Length: 75
Image (cartoon, rainbow, N blue to C red):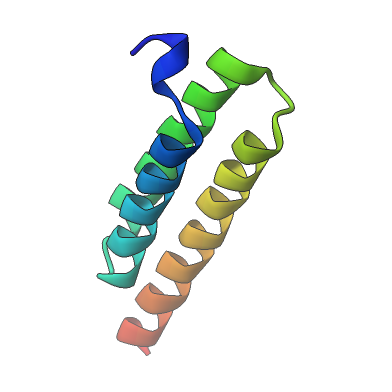
């Protein structure tokens, strides 16, 4: 993927795909997708690009949701 390929539309598409995985309970896959997107954004647009930070925050939220779901299933 070249620098030009990571358009705002592509970022939105990938964020939506990760969100859909989380909604389906696929928390590990969602976290992986968010993390990969964050790294790709950083590589193309800089370490502190707001969209990368948003993606990494989504990783943390997804991990929390996965842990909560696991706790509910066990309890």
